[in-house]
Figure (cartoon, rainbow, N blue to C red):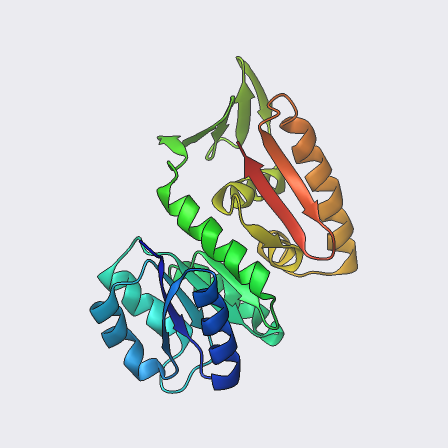
Length: 228
């Protein structure tokens, strides 16, 4: 059975190319160009995943995601955003988005993001016991800001703890460096960017005893937190 994608894009030329390319790759694509028609289409077609442009006539992608979440709190939602809309990405995640892609994007990137979102939907979530996240060999105590392994514990600083939590929450996704900086430090200044490099190195060192966990640097983009 093919994967059904609800694709919402008001740039019709771009939309036609994306729709046809996805269909050539075996996806079943329902395309809408007007935000006013999307919820009705969602209820009729019940897609496996939604790909929503943020800027749409009548209703924004964020508004649509909020309504989709009222109907289905599990279906993956990927936002398509212009570069100037980076500051709105956090809002998109708060409204239930699973991932986002900046325009212009390659079809290969879009297909990989769709496949990742669908795979993550099937994966078992992180084991959470109280305020503790169990990941591989480690136990991460959120409130105490403590990372433990094999009976040993390491006290993390506030920013180390926030960075590790953000990486966990966005595991197996491409994490934009600027979004990470804005979330942890409040801006993406050169000074904070150098701080991020230091903190990533520290976190890698803290997690080195479990080879199934890796923070991959994606040059020019950001990071990917991978777990086996």
